[in-house]
Length: 342
Ligand code: AHM
Ligand code: MG
Image (tube, rainbow, N blue to C red):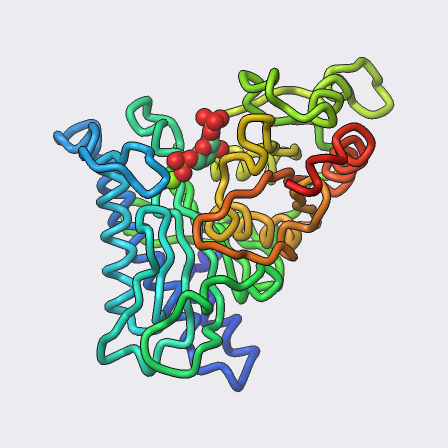
């Protein structure tokens, strides 16, 4: 019987770091801080059915959406871990209107800032459906002290690393530092993330499309055309595609990365910029998609090149294998050019 050697997340990032003699281990520690918070959040999510933690917290987040207790809990755990870890000097979170700048004994040392959605897809919590945490890591551009808004309003092309944690039938941490995408599954018996999905790439033959078709009536004509395209019969291009939509962006993205598919959250006639937030939802997955051989776009522009103007700005998202995203872009240019200016 042969046994495969287990590689833990910590071993993996230390090994990677040793390839860069100038690296001082700050990013390694930062990723470890995120992994630690993820394990605590994971424990709470798993226990959510058992303890009285489900339900509305009673406060609204800055988007006017009701927060659930677990959103608040996850937000606190990630902030706490990052603040205590000392490598991060500011955080932008979906749950906080303004940035949280760390003015503490570490703020001189912290070289990085993080934009995070601590619990994405939270409307799925009560239904025991997969949810996630998604994060972007940038190098600070301000000189010293606590991080600033300017540090966080960087375009995705400046990302140093990005990733997500998916709390699903198993819990996984997937991340990239710009050298491919690697996935680690949490072994709950010992509380350690182990490398399970090395060098993740979109598969050759992709045939899934993921979109909330309930909003069809408000979609740009280009997207209506794309949905029609997905549903046509053409065996040479593996159509009709299969439709899959969880309603948790992290989980939809993760499934599509493994099985091959495009995720779409369009701008609509009611909300031309769509729903998802550029800094802590679109950019991190766009970074991962590109690292996995795919593409991400707002229909006209590469997601990572969009210049952020505000912390919580929204942007349409079309993300997946290159050919699929390019088909959407072609149809948007042909049928909905007015959305380029939105
Ligand atoms: P949230 O951050 O408030 O949880 O909202 C983001 C979520 C995404 O995970 C998901 O893709 C999308 O909202 C689903 O929206 P809709 O219900 O409009 O399809
Ligand atoms: Mg959220």
